[in-house]
Image (cartoon, rainbow, N blue to C red; front, side):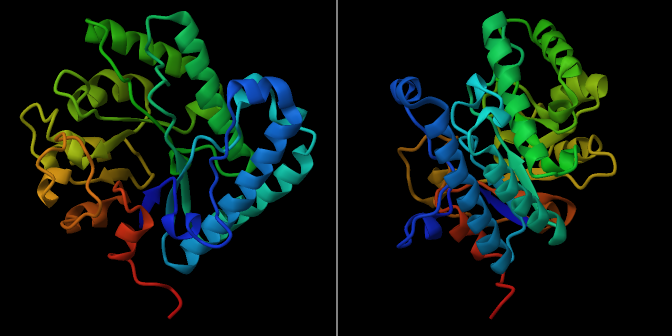
Length: 301
């Protein structure tokens, strides 16, 4: 199956805009608190359901949801929200659709999520972030497994990769089950950071968590492995679960000579057949669902 991340541009630009990342500033949180957070979360879950329904209609069965689904959730427990029961009901509808139609829903916490940081405060906040993501998936009554992945990066090496891997593995092993059962780790797009080979040998072999193969990132951290060789290493970590992979292309391939090599293009033009056959693929491009529609015929015509 194919999918995309976060914004559905078609629905976002419709007469009734649909998006599931409504948030608020710190000052608004401090003035409006739980009631407003609950209102935004309810709107986000309602629109997540609408996005999932649109995806199903258009034969898109993989979706990476925004990490803004429940704003300021780090500051409260879900059941403290005044409208918790309403949110729970809508979340369960999302989960029922996902399960009945064999869809996949994933998350990708932002770059501030650094589970291997040398700062105890940063680690604490990062742990809270992945736990919140796990609780949202629990609210949808989705299995605690990598099928519904919480995808993270190690994000740095802090001058000592071995020590960083040790810290990361220690934090992963201590996570509560709603997070640990779903965590997967992805290769990076900077030469000095984490390759597929390093993640398999230094993280997955020690913790059992799967490794997400990012096709575009591999060119920056190949360590002498071909795309197929690195992909096979990543696949070996997924056990009985179908792997998730990411595919994108640099804007430079599409005429933007001023772009960084890491920058994503508007669309993609060369999705490898072997990748699509062996993995569920999230296409990362600026045109979001429009890129996926080029490869996926509608269910209903």
